[in-house]
View 1 (tube, rainbow, N blue to C red):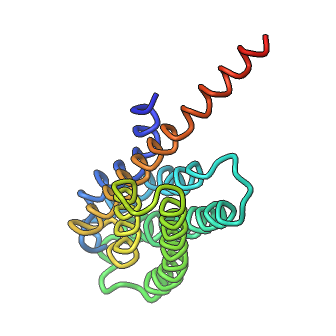
View 2 (cartoon, rainbow, N blue to C red):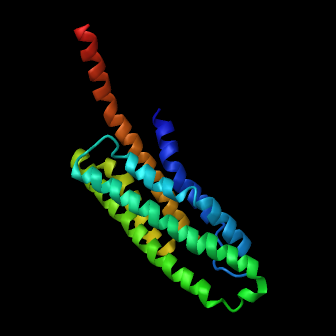
View 3 (cartoon, rainbow, N blue to C red):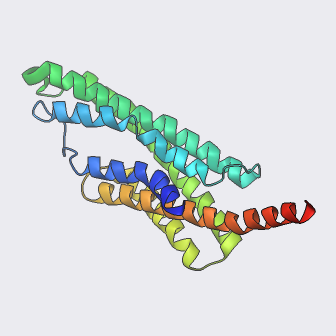
Length: 207
């Protein structure tokens, strides 16, 4: 059960890291087709990083948990917008234009500009969510080994802001986000097990 939890929550970050390892360093007619296709695949995965983050506080209604869900939602929507505009849109148009995309048309540059703005807001939201998760872990477990996955999530989300999923730091950021989120999910599942067992025992005692 714990390994399944880890796999499900870590998968989005790990998949993005693997995809990012093939990310072209720049967009031009030669790289446009790959640029388009990898971001087309990414649009299905980027939002799941936010879903995994929100899962860590599922079932809770306190303000900190609500903050995690809200930041995860903002990340999932706006960072996906970056992927759609700068990745899918610009990749497709550049591929179709071919040699006419050199020099880069102003319309492509303008699309990159708004995509970057939206992506920056989304990335900051992810980092804010990671900060809230870290605060929650410290409040519940204190400063100790349990904080390590939160630190991985923090570092990954911090470097994602500037590195996106480019090799090498963006790829490592995605791996850190995936491993951190998955590990935190395992800790959450482990913490819930004694309460589940105790509740079962109380129920059996009443019967």
